Image 1: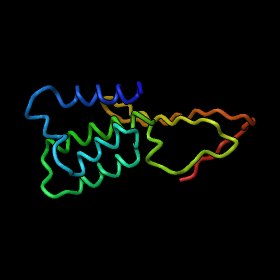
Image 2: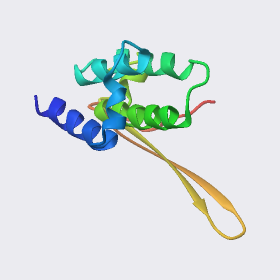
Image 3: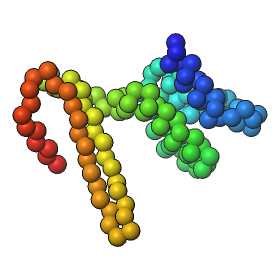
Image 4: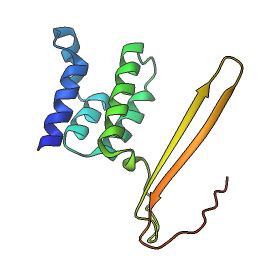
Length: 129
């Protein structure tokens, strides 16, 4: 219940209090469906509706920006888990991947930090492209 209130509060903040903005919830289009599904806790279905909305021809810049904010909210809600059906192997209980871009005046550096937890001891880890 608290999660739904937080999502609704954030959506209300994103949409603003103006009457012109209230049109986001009018109608039966993909954008409205995305909102409804996210508010009902169906993140994966909401993301599918967002993709459908993005594929509409002549999508205004305001709606594109709104969809980007809604997608960020959906990803934040479940840390992006709805975007993939892959599960972690038995020997890995938790993983976090952090990508950083460091810009200096003459170069750009990239750094990848991977952290995880495992009930079994892991001595080495190999990454493949």
